[in-house]
Amino acid sequence: MNAPAIPAFGLGTFRLKDQVAIDSVRNALELGYRAIDTAQIYGNEAAIGQAIADSRVPRQALFVTTKVWTEHLGADRLAASLKDSLHRLRLEQVDLTLIHWPSPGGAVPVAEFMGALAEARAQGLTRQIGVSNFNIALLKEAIAAVGAAQIATHQIELHPYLQNRSATAFTAAQGIPTTSYMTLAYGRVLGDPVVGQIAQARGATPAQVVLAWAMQLGYAVIPSSTRRENLASNLQARELWLSDAEMARIAALDRSERLVNPEGLAPTWD
Image 1 (cartoon, rainbow, N blue to C red):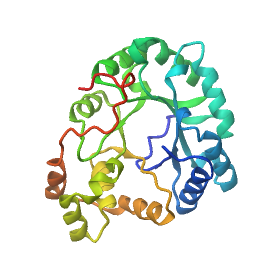
Image 2: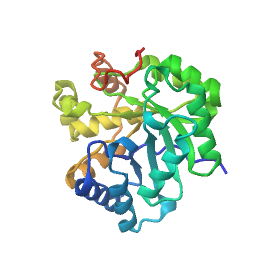
Image 3: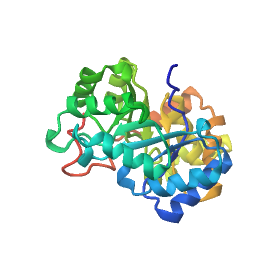
Image 4: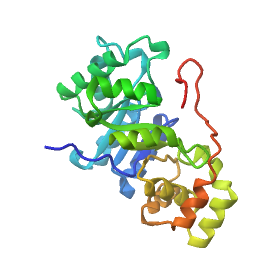
């Protein structure tokens, strides 16, 4: 049976902890969200597991993603860490597991952790595998290790101010879908005059315009919010379709403004 495509729209949970995370996931599931993105380092897998269990949404209706932290990339640690994630999430299997960041300084070779991730999938711990925050050189190593067809997505910071065209062109040529995180650039793009003009003309919110832009380019998006009304509003971005001229205006906003670039962790970006 073929693995399902990455949902185009999901809920991000970065920075959400404890009851805040539970409430956000609960509200999202009640509103119709069915994809949830978390990570070991977020410290909220247990809260998300509780919210999922309490929701009574059938497991087969959900798409749950987590990410393996750099400390667990060794072949002797990755699967065990993923089992711990499953325990916290109260799940027997996640739908997608990503390498959160490449191993700092190449301490664990790409071939080793991609092989370990593929083995975790073979054990039934995850349905699909992928990567996050890689540059093109590292993507080439990952492809060499497991094959492009086995990489379900590359998740990267991507928003109107950082459009990452080199990386997305490379993965598109390899048939690897892109997931955009921080699509709203910590809210910075919501005050952009161009985005505001398009939103006003369309009777939409700036957030809806930016999310629609990303999805129209073929990227999956995972915006987060702690407010139920914003969760509901963001979901409506799926119904918005921008004109070629509007897409071009947003394309012109790119200024290589990277907001996530942790020292000692981030690779040399393309």
